[in-house]
Each structure stands twice: as structure tokens, then as C-alpha cells.
Image 1 (cartoon, one colour):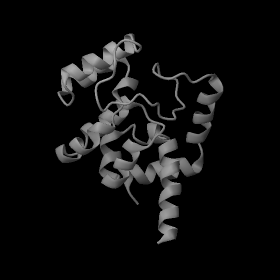
Image 2: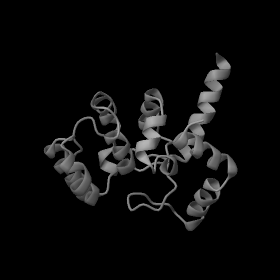
Image 3: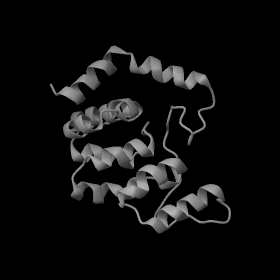
Length: 162
């Protein structure tokens, strides 16, 4: 049993590190990923995936799974434009919560977050607007990592099956 846990942990670490690329084709990735793995991905602080892409993954799950995973979307990390264009029309979040998050983003010292929402960043290595990547070196590491043969094989298995 310990071997299975170790294998799961190593696989999860790899997928979390490349999740932005693996889940780019959301529908197929969600079909192949077990629900427990999706739950772990949504809860993970070390996942390399944007909240907007996580939301797209969430929308590809069943309604029951959506309600379970919804609390793990970190609204404070979502760019304001995505809150307005993607999240608000979905009706999965209350308009009041979305307005509070937008207010918090513009004035974090005077506008508290809605109850239950956290602003802890996930470990990300992209150049999205909602993250400070620090340098171009980080982007190059992602590019090199996603060209590795083991990544290509893994992504192929996730999208197409064995």
C-alpha cells in the first residue's frame, strides 16, 4: 500500500507542476482524471494552474462535483476581467461575493474578503497578470519542462487514455 501512496504522490507532484498545460484541453482531461485527483488538484497550494483554468475544469465536471470543488476556487487570485467576463455569468458564485472580491482587489486594506475565501497564491510559473513571475527565467523553465519526453507521454495518456 505504501508503494501506491508513493506513486500517487510522485504522479500528483508532476501533474500539479504542469497542470496548466495538462488541463488546457479541459473536457478530455476531466474525463480521464479521477474525481479524487481533481479534488486534490483544487486543494493543492503547489498546483501550477490559474484559478480561471481551474474554473473551466470545474465547469466540465458534474453538478454534484461542482458544488464540492467550488469552495476551493480562490476568487481573490482571479483577474478582475475574468471575474466579470467568466465567473459572474456562470451564476455559481453570488454577485455579492464577486463584488466584495473586486473591492478587495482594488483596496485590500479597507475591503475584507467574503467569508471563506482565501488569497493564498498557488505556486505558479506562468506570466499571468495575477502573479509576479520575477523573471523570464521562470517561463523558460516551464517551456523546457513541458518539452521533456516524460511530460509528452504523460499528457498523451491523460488526454487519450492508455
